[in-house]
Amino acid sequence: DSGVTQTPKHLITATGQRVTLRCSPRSGDLSVYWYQQSLDQGLQFLIQYYNGEERAKGNILERFSAQQFPDLHSELNLSSLELGDSALYFCASSTPSAGTGELFFGEGSRLTVL
Amino acid sequence: AQSVAQPEDQVNVAEGNPLTVKCTYSVSGNPYLFWYVQYPNRGLQFLLKYITGDNLVKGSYGFEAEFNKSQTSFHLKKPSALVSDSALYFCAVRDPYSGAGSYQLTFGKGTKLSVIP
Image 1 (cartoon, each protein chain N blue to C red):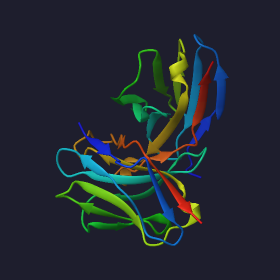
Image 2: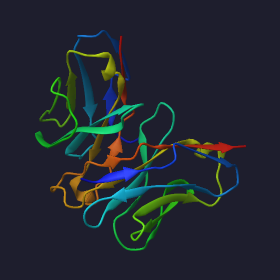
Image 3: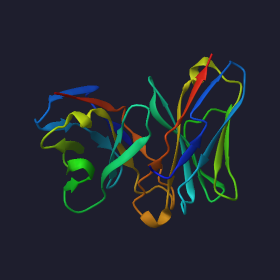
C-alpha cells in the first residue's frame, strides 16, 4: 500500500459527459501528480500541483483541469469526454524532503468512455 | 527534453535464469533514473533509483540496475527470475534541473516480463 488513495476505481460514462477523479496523497506529501496510462501512449504526465499551486504542466488537454485543495487532496476534472479519453488515470505524490523525488502511485482510476 | 527508451516490448525468461530489462535515456546533465513495476490492475511500485555514486544500484525484491553513463543506459537485472516477477516494468528519468519540488518523471513505454515456470 503506497498510501495514495484514488477514487473511484472504475468509472463508465458516455461521450460528452464530465467526470471528476479524486486523489488523496500520502500523509505529509505536498505534491500531487496526475498521469494518464493508455495502450498507445503509455504513461503521460498531465499536471503537477504543489501545496495548492500548479507547478508543472505536461500533455494535458484543455478539456481537462485539476486543482489541489487546502487539505492537499486533488481532483482531476475531465469534460466533453471522447472515446479516446478511456484510460487508466494515476495520481502520485512525493515529498520534498526526499530530495531525489521518487513518486508514490495510487492504484489508479480506470475510465471507460462509451 | 528528456526521454527514455525501452527497446523490448516483451522479455521472456525461464524461472531461475538471470533476467535483464533494457533502458536507455536522454537527458541534459546528470540524470536521476528510476525503475518501477506494475502488476496487473495495480499502481506503479518503486523498485530502485540511481542518483549518484556507485553505478550498481540495489533495490527491492532482489532487483538491481547498472548505470552506464557512456552508453546512456540503466538496465534492470536480477540473478534468478521468479514466476512472481512477471509484470510490466517501467524505466523513468527525472531532469535534475527541474524546478525545486518538481519531480515529474518521464517514463518509457514499458516492458512486459514473463517468467516461464
